Length: 336
Ligand SMILES: *Cc1c(COP(=O)(O)O)cnc(C)c1O
Image 1 (cartoon, rainbow, N blue to C red):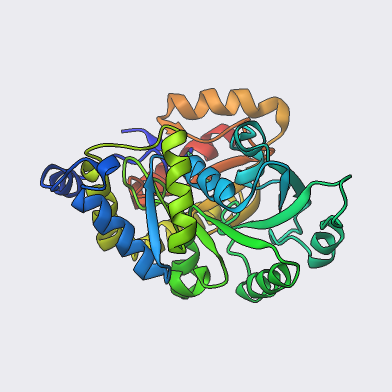
Image 2: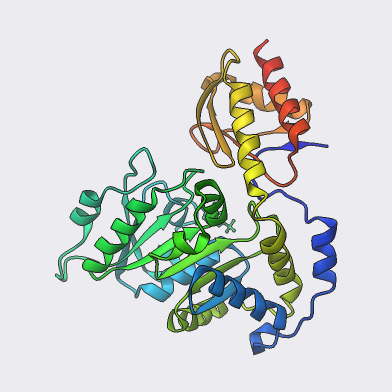
């Protein structure tokens, strides 16, 4: 079997997850009649401390529904220059929402310095877009944002009259790694997007949580974006199963990522740049990247090569201890 370390999105639904999907009670969710979708939405809203939730097909749509619920045409949001909601969502906020992103360079720990944020807020003047929202991301390229910073940044945003959104695609990785509850990490925000199809191992779906009012608006946008689904309880059942069975085990993914980083660290020609939660980033000379990709594929190992400035390796539900050792051996053979 391939050791696929490209992303934690590649997981196969387990047999037990498929059984939960098969058994799901369903209805037409556009009519608000799918009990399993309703249960998932309420479950995440309750767990994270919000009034309501909205099940959507992807994290991209979840973030976009959140942005559209916070901002009007001609508004702008402050966002990390290397954040998913800015860089990796096809420019959707600008294309579909007429919302201008104001990208802010990240500090090394992923935070957006408060002085840079403060300097980016526009005065109320017809020359400028109206600054309406701050978007943060946790984890960011695997890094857990310092919670003290998150609290400070959210308080600052409120003091400037801005809404605060969290792209929490991997919020549960952050919670497990920091031994804080997801609820505590989510508390400073007005809206939070969580992915079920990353480390949690569900095949499809994200949930946006927020106030009833915000979710009502997001639901209108979801329909407009084509995300109103019918008997989607069959998908929501996978999410509920994942929340029950796949959260605590994220610690195993983090331990395996640490072991992978350790195994790679003394291999010539490879520099381990960082390891955080379930991600490892390595530097390999640019001219060797294509050869590395071919070498790994031949040995049944996949890595994310050429997509980010560094090679990214991500651990997940379908990577066991033996898989990590096989990956380390494949890298060592490349060097030798
Ligand atoms: C994966 C991801 C998303 C959403 O991606 P989809 O592929 O649209 O589900 C959003 N933010 C971050 C940080 C992600 O890693």
